[in-house]
Length: 386
Ligand SMILES: NC(=O)C1=CN([C@@H]2O[C@H](COP(=O)(O)OP(=O)(O)OC[C@H]3O[C@@H](n4cnc5c(N)ncnc54)[C@H](OP(=O)(O)O)[C@@H]3O)[C@@H](O)[C@H]2O)C=CC1
Ligand SMILES: Nc1nc(=O)c2c([nH]1)NC[C@@H]1CN(c3ccc(C(=O)N[C@@H](CCC(=O)O)C(=O)O)cc3)C=[N+]21
Image (tube, rainbow, N blue to C red; front, side, top):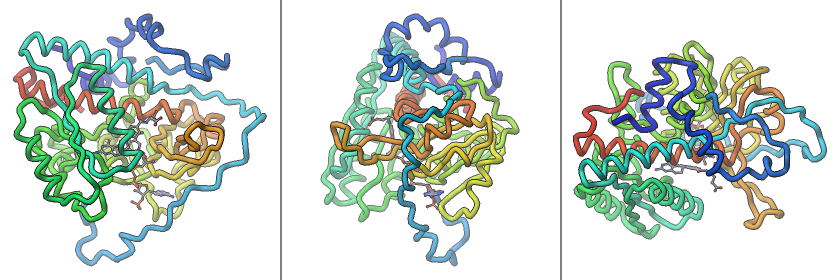
């Protein structure tokens, strides 16, 4: 049986800059299934890209570690209304990439059901009632439904105890129909995130946040069972866009466990030269301006301006930031870390928000869950190549 999305990474690694050919014959089907975006409907269709935390400083670390400079949203750039930005960048279509991955997963789930009589199972643990977390969990469950993966949701109140969360994780650890467990982050402040994430059985850690999976991702001689989904999504979008990473200079903005750290590690496994920018970095613009690829996961709207980019750079915008928008039904809309209109004038390719990294992150969660089930049912003997 062919690998899931992860196998794509492997294929692309062997043949860098080569389009991922087994997706291509489905172009017709894809066109039929994908409704036109608002932009496309408006007749301004852009080119699609189809070609394809541990204490590092020891115990005497200053308190300042926990008090980064305030990272509030930057003031928005001047309104772009009516201005011709002369955008030339290829828009990397994450929705379409995600759809292709889900198609492949659906087929593999069907084959699994025929072969062993079981489908993969994902359990999601949601603590508290943050609206953004509830939405993200909904997307994950909807994604499971679309590809035939069984999903279970454990919802706990925000004032529950840490032990109750660990108990919930333990029950899923023991359930043989569950192959992936995801604890939605952030957890309420009174909880020890590290303890809860470490309670997830290594073989079911489809988020890839277990310290052993993170450590194995960092070590060249080792292979993690699972790589965090947002990191895989960034790599997938770059590789599917035909971008060869070997020797490329990548600026990674953010160093969190969820995005920045694993992405920087995965990029190094693909032989990129990685500069990590964080809240204490004094010269972020200088670093990004020297970079062939800029990946931003700071959670700060409008952080990356057009002037931060080298001509022709590739921009992957992971940031998903709600900003007030009285014209929207909900009173807010999502925007990335990158000032899109400015960046699109300078970059050669860029991911939009929404519709860029996000949908691919969800698809990667489904891929990791499928991979876990394959290992559990003896349909694969070791993790995919990264
Ligand atoms: N599209 C997707 O699939 C996903 C999107 N996201 C989005 O990505 C963004 C980041 O998420 P996450 O990593 O969980 O967030 P965290 O808040 O955990 O991490 C943010 C990182 O950005 C750094 N940072 C903050 N402000 C600045 C700044 N002004 N300049 C440079 N670096 C800065 C921080 O530095 P320091 O370490 O010094 O504090 C930190 O390393 C959010 O918008 C989130 O919603 C997240 C996951 C998936
Ligand atoms: N244990 C855990 N694992 C995670 O992977 C994890 C997490 N906790 N906590 C929160 C962050 C955030 N995250 C996103 C996933 C998908 C979209 C996504 O699909 N975004 C859509 C927008 C959807 C909309 O319109 O609301 C898009 O960009 O097109 C966004 C953000 C995963 N995270």
